[in-house]
Length: 339
Image 1: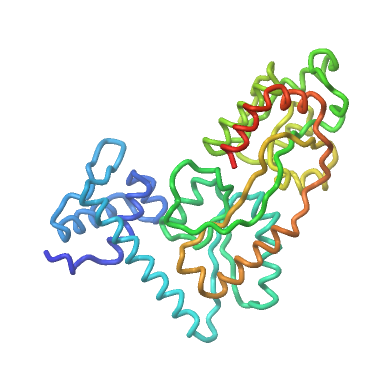
Image 2 (image 1 turned 135 degrees about the horizontal axis):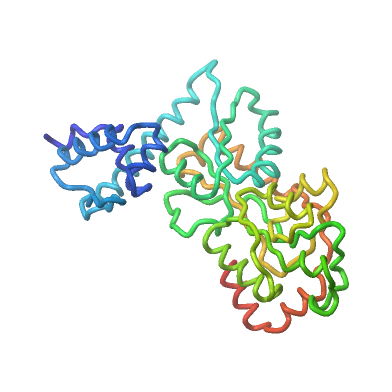
């Protein structure tokens, strides 16, 4: 069967499986069954007259032929997407849909104000918004289920060279503590705190960041809260802050993630840390950079990012400043490597 018999449907499935590495994940992303994916991949291999994957019990690994086809398939699909996107500009009376995925805190703080700005010039544009983890956002982008992805630039370890990064907003990491616990003058956790206050600072609520950020935050806790223990792993900032508000412990998180929670419900105090700020970006396929409404929406995202104001943050307590100054050369290297 000649290569000309390859179909766009087969190439989309091939790219999704290559990105997901398993048929199970790819089937979930595409909304298809695993037998359907296997059948289409077999037909594609017949067209290519080559084996594209080495199949194991748990993973689909690209062969040399598969890696070759992946480079060209992505180019073909990007060109088709660009053509389809451009053709929408010639349509009249059709409502455009911008499909967006990202972390909840960035969507609330930046994307919603940007949508409000865009509505003034593009009132008929609809938004399909997915609140997802960084890894899920990438999966949706690679499977072309969404067009834009909002994530922190260091949230994922894998390469995202297939997409262009547009800087959106920068916000500092803060230490969230129960409102009744005043850390402003605490220089030594062992000496200056007693009873329930000492216990609260030693109990950390951990939010599941990406691999690199998790490692950096654990190093920070070891340096500043040497006798801490992790009492909970959360998958939303709201849950982590609710636990802090209840006096169960402390949590490190981006300031904008605490914006609505802290301003609407008292009971949490935020303190500055010496961690480098979270740099959030919008990942977008290159073809969307040149067409509306995506081009103007990216501008609106950046304007909303510049206008975003974090909640009130108290200065770093003395024990944080002291730990940061204790090993300046190592701290400088860590901050530089994380930028």
